[in-house]
Image (cartoon, rainbow, N blue to C red; front, side):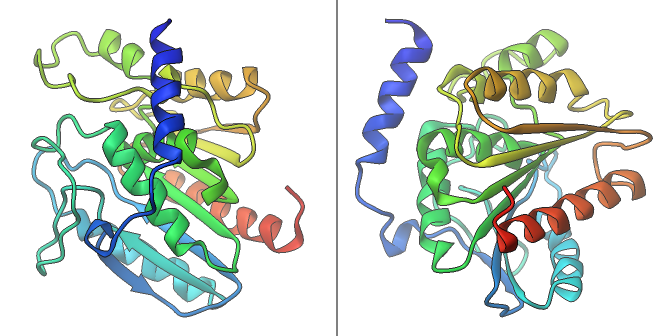
Length: 252
């Protein structure tokens, strides 16, 4: 059995697992109380110890512009913020957290938040990679996914970063190593000037999804960086607004 088939079989078993208990709920911040659409956002790795709540302001801006939406800014597994909120799971020092176990946590929490409203999931950088893996576990938990600056192909990422410390990516699983999601529409956005997660990483995942018959829209943003400068954040916001229109009018 190939590595991809082995991982896909394990993911299939996880789909049959019971839903997350209360102690498995990812912590975070809810912004807004709109009933028309739910937007769930996952932050980046902040591998150098940065504040993972820094993107909360971005969520507040989305809520301001979309009063009919509820925004959930979730802390990824094993992360905590300066106010004491902490999510269960293990992130191995923020260096090796793209695991099947964490993907299961994310998928279960997306399913928990789904409710009656359509759900759009958004991930940035490492959050996008974890979200992509979670979609292979339970793509029915979302209506659309937006992956920004995604290191979705870990094998290719290793090739592009030969000086990365050995032994720090032993637990992680690449989203390109498992069966691709084919139901949820996926938008991939990468800045042309992104030197952290360059465009070939998103291009590889887009091909992976498209070859499986899925919907993957790839956008390379001129002048866009990794962190979210005006060019990247403008495209990012536009993708969220467009996804909202599609899920509310069922034009997917």
